[in-house]
Length: 65
Image 1 (cartoon, one colour):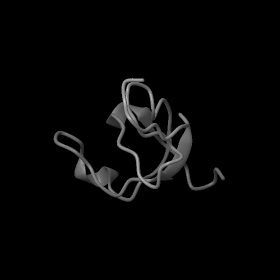
Image 2 (cartoon, one colour):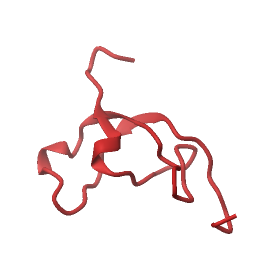
Image 3 (cartoon, rainbow, N blue to C red):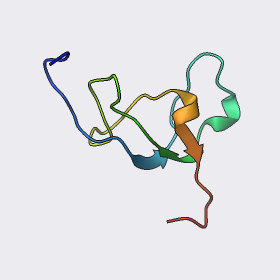
């Protein structure tokens, strides 16, 4: 395995609490659905926090559970 420890799962939903370089500041606090969270990484959505490319964090409207 490419990592000594794997935290599984690909899809999930949450709130953006930090952003990286070149990501608009207005994304902070945004509700999102994320996909392919673990693809090529050690941590997936079963982790407490996960880092994904911004295009893998899709806006989740307030009326969607």
